[in-house]
Structures are given as C-alpha cells and as structure tokens.
Length: 219
Ligand code: PRT
Ligand code: MG
Figure 1 (tube, rainbow, N blue to C red):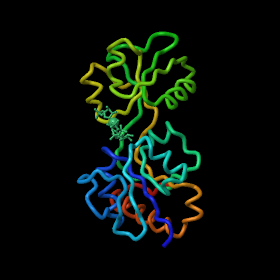
Figure 2: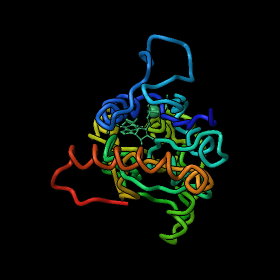
Figure 3: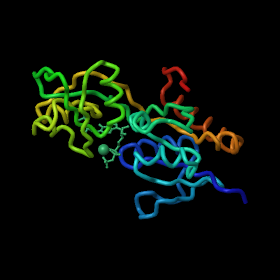
C-alpha cells in the first residue's frame, strides 16, 4: 500500500468550522477527534489521515512535506510565509481581520511607534510599507493589555466583532488584511500525488461553493 496522504488541521476555533466542511466534502474522521488524546487519525477514506496540530504549526508541516495538505488561517500564512506551498482554495471560514488598534480616542503619537503583536513579520512589513518607524515587540497573547500597561502605543491583532478591543478601552485603527482560512498543499506533493490530491481539492471546492452560492469561485 502506498504512503498515506496526511492532511494537517488547525486545532481550536478553525477546527470547529473545518470538520463540517470536510464532512460536506466526504472526508470524515474514523473516530471523534475530541474524545481522544490522539493527534493522528484515520478517516473514512483509504489512505487519508488527519493530524490535528497548533494552527501556527500547520504551514511548517505542509512546507516540509510532513503533511501533504493542510488548513491554515491567512494570518498564519502571512506571518509564516508560503515558500513551498500552494494555496489552491479559500475555505471561506473563520473570517476576521488583521488590524492595528490602540487606546480609544487616542491618536498614535511618537515618531517611532512601539507595536506589540504576535504577528511580528506582518507588522514589520506593514509599518515599513506605510513609512512608519516601528519597534515591534513580540507577545504570545493578551495583546490588548499592552497599550493599557504602557508596553506599546499600538497592537496588531485579529479583530472579529471588536468586542475584545472595546472591553479593554481600545478601538481598531487600520485594516492590514482580510482573513479567511485557506487550503494549502505541499508543492512537491502536488506533483507527486496529483491524482490523489485533485479529487480531494475538487470535493472541498464544491463543498465551499455549495455553502457560498453567491460568491465567485476563488483560487
Ligand atoms: O489561542 P491559542 O493560542 O490557543 O491558539 P491560536 O490562536 O493559534 O488558535 P485559535 O483557536 O485562537 O484560532 C486562531 C485562528 O482563528 C486565527 O489564525 C484566525 O485565522 C482565526 N480567527 C478567526 C480568529 C478569530 N476569528 C478571533 N476572533 N483568531 C483569533 N480571534 C481572537 C483575537 O485574537 C482576539 O483575541 O478573538 C479576539 C477578537 O475577537 P472579537 O470578536 O472580540 O473582535
Ligand atoms: Mg487564539
């Protein structure tokens, strides 16, 4: 039997929206993912396995070929880079925005802005493009706290409803990128495993189109 196709899924909030979409595309885990401590799962399809990993690790797995394909937020892809990856499909789930934000009613001051974020590459690129001098500080969570604690003038973070910002006396400022979740495929796998991958990609594309009837096909 040939080597199984490995499909890497982002755990957390993306997973909740991914599983119903995979089911619509005819791909189902052989057992419930949340009832076990396992990380590698068989599916209803012969020779297709799922791995459930941290969202930030998905691009690494797929890029290095440990997984053949994966599901990752565009924010994570922008931060990680997409060398060695194809992005054939926008799954149109987990929609949000990558934005700058600061204390409500306060204009960004300082010639050299201090910016706290976990998206350091995205932030450096964004401020450079804007011609704004920025000192980017890496944080791993609770970015909303940084301006309140005088750690930073501004943050770069994911915004959906804006409730998290509002609850902390902050407001969104500039849009950096609209974010949805993407299907990514290892470039070598796309060549070597083309006949096995294409039906999966097409089933997913169809499932996305059925769910988003008025949106034009992307990717
Ligand atoms: O959180 P943890 O460190 O465990 O893991 P993670 O952040 O890697 O995963 P998880 O489950 O939080 O999922 C992150 C992915 O979901 C991101 O890469 C995005 O592509 C997508 N996504 C969609 C979101 C949101 N919506 C979202 N609202 N990721 C995070 N948020 C957070 C945001 O960071 C902020 O704290 O929700 C808060 C803002 O939401 P509102 O509605 O209050 O504006
Ligand atoms: Mg999170």
